[in-house]
Image (cartoon, rainbow, N blue to C red; front, top):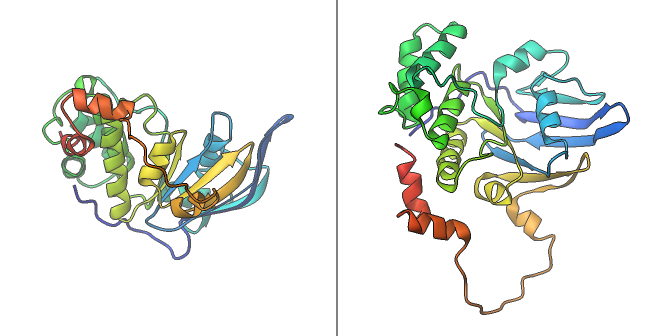
Length: 269
């Protein structure tokens, strides 16, 4: 799967937020959040439930107004230039927003028509190929696995080639194999030039995918850096020789007949 570079890119960071604050009555959800995301990179926003991750995404995608602070996405102010921001982004929520009655192809054609693209059928065929769904394209989505539905959902988000995509906990509820399929799709997005802001509760997901990682806790970013930089916050590792036990994910993939690498290859189905 090869995803071409996106269009309408403007110089500077893809996402830049400074001092974002948001409260709901007496509950302070965001307490001055700063975020900077380089173009073509994957930025992971980690945090537990209630940390404010989805609130950040909603503000950056113009669905919610911040009480204080500023934010720009693809060079556009999220408040003063909201329409330009919306043209520059796509948002994929925690659950796949696909129509199970339609086929995968029909879902894609429908969205392409809603976006007034000139050749919806060609757009659908291209995305099915790019996300390794061509063989399943004419099957009803109700027959898809969780990973296939999620890949279709992400493919639908890419119609119109948005330079920035927000993925809000994209692997919630997926089994280990489906998670690997989605990881592969996200990595391909970044290789094609799309900027990805990913929210997740899964530490392994951020470690696997992200160029930079920020941890949001009680409404504040408490650390922000590359994986290597974050690891330096801890004392130097003590070398010990111990017997390595397989993880539960290793066991699961082994008993179903696939290694992690095999599962990535199978994700093309």
